[in-house]
Amino acid sequence: MTTDARPGPLPLLISVPHAGLALPQEVAALNLLTPAQIARDGDEGAAAIYAALAPHVAHYVSAEVGRAFVDMNRAEDDLGKDGVVKTHTCCNEPVYRAPLPAETIEALLARWHRPYHEKLSALAGSDVVLGVDCHTMAATGPPIGPDVGKPRPEVCIGDGDGTCPRDWADGLLACFQRHFSGPVLLNQPFSGGHIVRAHAAELPWVMIELSRAPFASDAEKGRRVLAALTDWLGKGKVASG
Image (cartoon, rainbow, N blue to C red):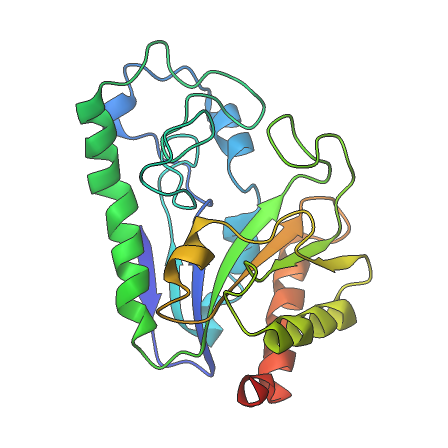
């Protein structure tokens, strides 16, 4: 996990939980995935896209471990196929040659999952007004997902059915619509995962999912996200909540 903290012009806590590619040493001997499969199961492009935010926000937290091995956006007790320590990728590929022992799963949670969430909790008490959980998504729904085979919007904003005030979410929607030319939807196909829901009692949170469709370069997508968030904060939406 890397953390970049500074007094920045935007009072935001940015979380990028699926940008990592690292293969944990605890499971290296059982791993079946190639580097390409590890990358495909994560949020491809997320590191490059959201790096544009890092110099401009109060706190920027990004995971280093591959999502296929430890998913920060799942609860600790979610041990299903697509849970916190997965058995299969989003493309339904087996991750391991044999089931992981319970002590190995515990070691993964202790080394990667808990410190990430502890960091988010600690930073929620700092001078920030909103947490933003940042993701990329396949242009069409993958085999494991709520929308298999369906086209997705350029941007999905998720408010977790209450993880931030609804007028904040509506304001964010309008700002992203100004800075992206394609569809920008609220809670479609995702309303927000474990991170926004688990930490909403500490700080308002919202999720952003950007399509990996090539409608713009990664650098340009990052600039548009930064512009939309800056636009939203500049319009006083926080005060109205």
